[in-house]
Length: 207
Image (cartoon, rainbow, N blue to C red; front, side, top):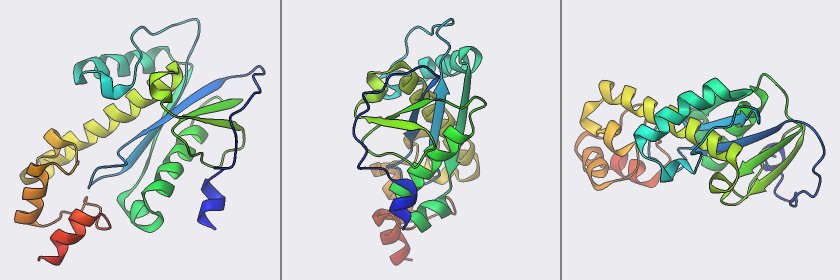
């Protein structure tokens, strides 16, 4: 039943290009071993273009931060949403990601007529939606969403690094780097780790 609630994988690419606002959506944090998955939705203002939009992974942290402020200032509207560690454990990471996307779109101040989503899966939405593989590098509004989601999650990692400095979240952002895996082996998981992910599960088993 979950897949029917969140997925519309059977939806083909749209040929409809009617009038109305277009929102771009992307996520950050599917792969890490800790923390929420974050999604952002952005409706850009064509009268206030933003130079330098690109896939957030191709930008430096400093450039992402600068663009984050510009997007928040110049976009018609934007929204950032999360699915928690508990929701990831309950739903699995794919469905939690789609839930975060759903929340981001419904959190927009202005309802879009169409939604363009990076990737190949779609959340259940009340408007037309299209999945675009590699959309964060092709479509400006998706690029903007990728930047908001990435910066928001990186800031979360910096905050939890203050609470659990032994894991190094500010450096590896929760990904399964050798340093993070070594910290897991040494200290065991902390409350923000995703216990259903294999390396965290293995660290729990060793306790």
